[in-house]
Amino acid sequence: MRASFRGVSTRSTLWPYTRFQYGAHRKNAILWTIGLTIYCGLIVAIYPSVSDAIDISLIPENLRAAFNINDFTQLASFLSSELFGVILPLILPFFGIIILSNVVAGAEERGRLDVLLGNPIPRVHLIVGSFAVVASYLLALAGVIGVVVWIVANLLDLELAARQSMRAAFALWPLTLAFGALALAMSSVVRQRAVALGVPAAVVFLMYLINVIGKLAPSVSGVRFMSAHHYYGTAITEGIWWAGALVLLVASAALVTFAAVAFNRRDIYA
Amino acid sequence: MPAPSKGSFAPAIQTFELTKTYGANRGIRNVSLTVERGEIFGFLGPNGAGKSTTLRTLLGFLKPTSGRAEVLGLDVLAHAVEIHRRLGNLPSEFSLEDRMTGFELIRFHARLRRSGTESLKRARDLAERLDANLEMPMRRLSRGNKQKIGIIQALFHEPELIVLDEPTNGLDPLMQDVFLLILQEARDRGQTVFFSSHVLSEVERVADRVGIIRDGELVAVDDPNALTRRAFRYVRIQFDGPLDSGIVQEIASLPGVDRFECHGTTLSFTIGGSMHELLQLATQRCVISFDAERPPLEELFLSYYEDDSE
Image 1 (cartoon, chains in turn orange, yellow):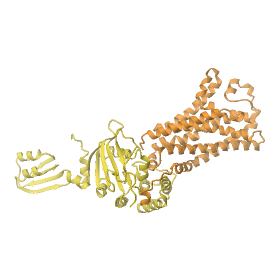
Image 2 (image 1 turned 90 degrees about the vertical axis):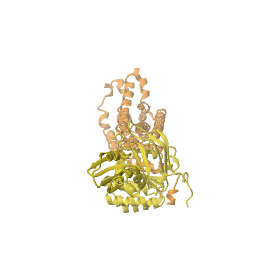
Image 3 (image 1 turned 60 degrees about the horizontal axis):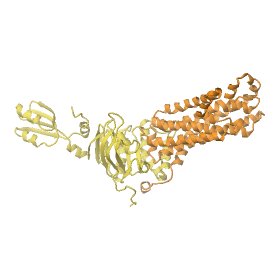
C-alpha cells in the first residue's frame, strides 16, 4: 500500500509508451517490409527488359523533366524516374499517415484514450512517442529499400553503387516524416479518424501534382515551393539535397509541436 | 505512518461551481461537491444527467467552462499527470487493446506507473476474485469480461482515489457482489472511492454518501439514510367512517402533499416535510390505521428527476 500511495515517480513514461507502440506496429512494419521488398526487387528485376524497349527521345522534354526521365540506359536514372520518382514518394508516406492519424482521433473514436490517459502519462508523450516509433520504422523501411535495390541490382549484374541506392532510400525519410507529422497534427485537431487519414492522403497526391505541374509549366514553377515533393529532390542521381531535407525535417518538427499543443488543449470525449 | 504527500490533508475531491457546457442542454452547471478521504461516494443520475461529464472533468479530460476542481488537493488542469499517478480510473465506455491479453495490458499500465511486481500480484488476486481471464486476447472477451479487466486496471495499483463510471455495467449479480465487497475493502484500507451509477441498490449498499445529479445540477448530497429520511413518505390513513369533503380538502391542500387519492374511508398520498399539521387534522377523526412508509432509494432517486412543473 505504502509503495503505491507514495509511488510518485519522476521517471518518464515516454519509454514504456514508446515500447508499447513499437510492439503495436511491429506487424504492420513487417508487412510493409515484405511488400516493399517484393515490389522494389521486381522493379529492379524488370529493368533489363525495359531499358532498351523505351526510346525516351519520343517523350516530350517537359514530361521528361517533370518525371526525371533522363537516361534509361542507366539503372539509377530509371529508378529515379520510376521507383524513387513516383511510386515510393506516393506510397511510403501512407505508412506514417495510417498509424499517426490513429494516435488521437482514432483512439478517441474507439474509446481507448480514457483508459490510457487515466495513467500518469503526459499527453505530449503520446505525440512524441508515436512519432518516434513511426520515424524509426520509416528509417528502417528506407534502409531495407536501399539494401534490397542494391542487392537485386548486384545479383543481376546491373551497375548501381550501394551509395546511390542508400541515399535514394534515405531521401524518402524526411518526406515521409513530413506527411506523417501532418497526419498526427490532423489527428490532434479533428475528432474523426477518417478526416485525419483522408486529408493527409489527399495532400500527398495534391503536393505531388503541384510539383509535377510546376515542372511541366515553367510559368507556374513557383508553386512547387508549396510541395513537399519539391524538397525531396533526386537523390539517386544527384545526391541528397540537404537543404530540402532540412526544410522537410523542420516542417515535421513544427507539425509535431503543433500536434502536442493542440492535443494538450483539446477535450477528450471518449 | 507514511509521510504526508502533496495535498494529503485536502479532501479527495472538491469542486467549486464547476461548469462544463458543450451544447444548449448538455453538461454540468455549478456543481460544488466535496468527497472526503476514505469514503465511498456514490454519484447517481440517469444517462445524460452529467455524471460522466463530472467525472471526466475531474480527470482533466474535459476543461471546465467555468469553476474549478481539485483532486487530492491538486488542481485538475495544472496537475493532471500527478493526479493520474495517484488514482485509478474506469471509464463508462471504453475499449481495450484487442491484440493484447488482460495481463499484457495490466503489465503495460504497471510500467507506466512504475508500480512494481507487487501490483501485478494484486492484479492476479483481483482477477481470481472477479473470475477474470487475464490470459486471453481481449478481442475474444465478452463485454462483461472486458469490464472486469477494466476494473482490475483501475484497482491493481491500490490508488489513493478510485474513480469509476458505471463500474457494474456488464457484470452478473454474483460478480457485482464481489466487486462491491472489493470497494468496501478498499475503503477500509483508507482508499477513497467515487463511483457513478444508476443502480441505486448497489449505491445504497456500499456508499457512505450519495450525490444526486439531475439535468447537470447537483440536487442533493447526503448519506443514503438521511436522504431517505429527508424525503417524502407514502401515507395511508384509514378512518372509521366516511369523511366530509371539508377535511379531505384540508388534508389534500397541506404543504408537501401530493398524489392524493380518496377511496371511501381511506386516504392515500405522499407527503414531504413535517407531518405535524397532518396529524393534527387526521386525529380530529377516529383513525383506524396510519401507515407512513419511507420510499425505497430507487423511488427517491426518481423523484429527483420528476419535472418540477409536473
